[in-house]
Image 1 (cartoon, helix red, strand yellow):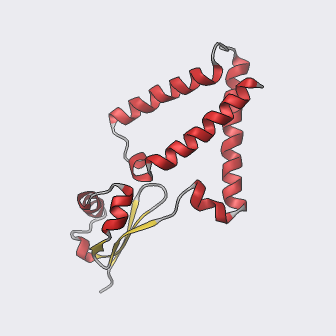
Image 2: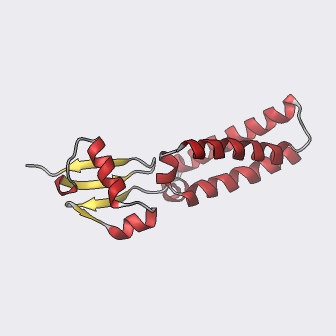
Image 3: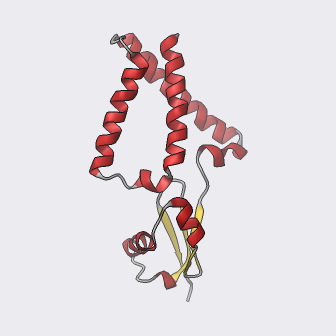
Length: 147
């Protein structure tokens, strides 16, 4: 039972950590970030299982994480009001070609990053953008000005 309680505590900690880190950072993993995640995974595993290297212990940890993930997903589905807390909300970063600095600072984004994402969508200038929205996945979606 101890291993399940440690897993629940680690899951809650990681859920909060992912919300604090921010969606943009999670969507653009650099090689160092990937290495950090692997090391973090190993550290979490050691904290969860301690000296228990049995298959049963591993199944308990993995199963508990899976059940908690399904539970969090179900809570977000069943109680729509909890979605902003669990998943975040889309955030408008450009409106009518104008960058919203307050929202960029909130998400630690630069105008250059927005412009780069726009170019990847075949948009040459932010002046051509009606709306740019930082989605909960960390991707930026663009709606061009009509006409």
